[in-house]
Image 1 (tube, rainbow, N blue to C red):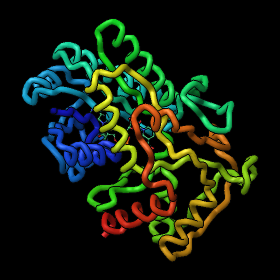
Image 2: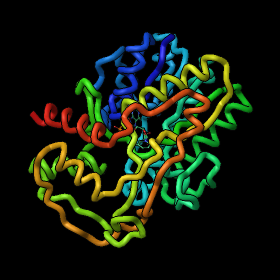
Image 3: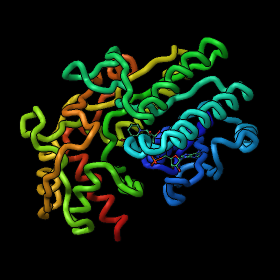
Length: 324
Ligand SMILES: NC(=O)c1ccc[n+]([C@@H]2O[C@H](COP(=O)([O-])OP(=O)(O)OC[C@H]3O[C@@H](n4cnc5c(N)ncnc54)[C@H](O)[C@@H]3O)[C@@H](O)[C@H]2O)c1
């Protein structure tokens, strides 16, 4: 089985490429290295190029005999998407059409898509299940919502089968520390707090300390990147077994506050973390926590890194190597 991994030089894509290779699939990474890293491509063949280039896509599909696709490629910063909706819709929506049309041309019928918990918008329930209404509030979240719909429509029209995976906060690094999280600029909490602990930034800013949560700071659901990688392989197997298109949350079902994460970083690193309290940021919801039961029931997926300490410890282990 040959799997095309778009965005496989990025954070979640590289971990998934490793897991796919470990479970015996042939991996082909397609990435334009706009935010990805050449040294993250260690499992499988590498095709450097852009999703927007249909001639390049035709060449890749023909050369490697692609059977299935995992589609990570895209831009990921919610705030930036508000400032530059054009580049987000173009890269995340238009260029996905180019990929889907190439799949149709080459008779490839199975795709797993990186969606996001941001499609839910403002939570109406304490934990978010897949049936929660979809109310995206940023161009980034809209780009995910739109592609979920496009996949359903391509299913009806062209027989494409898809699994959309709505990740909560991806975190942690490969337990062997062969690959990890390296976003530039970094916007995710755990690597930012680790940078503050290591003295690579002055402090960690805590935006909002008066939310209606136990300690006043925002609650998020952190899911280990190795658990995400495992879910992608299960989703591909689900489609390869002839099962229908579906949508799943990927989270661990527990919320951790910003203050709790800072405390865990202090424990794991043994270092002090300078903190600066700041006003709330526009668009931040007090709590975003998944109900991940459906993925357990249908895909047999159960997160292995439920303890947030193990998530932070794997990230710390990787960052120390990467910084060195
Ligand atoms: N990191 C998270 O917490 C999170 C949460 C929800 C959803 N997601 C989604 O998961 C996916 C992967 O996220 P990530 O954190 O690994 O991001 P990342 O930036 O590390 O990886 C994205 C990769 O896509 C590549 N890419 C972007 N546009 C491309 C194009 N036009 N052609 C070819 N390659 C292109 C980049 O070079 C990069 O390697 C994204 O679709 C993101 O929206 C991530």
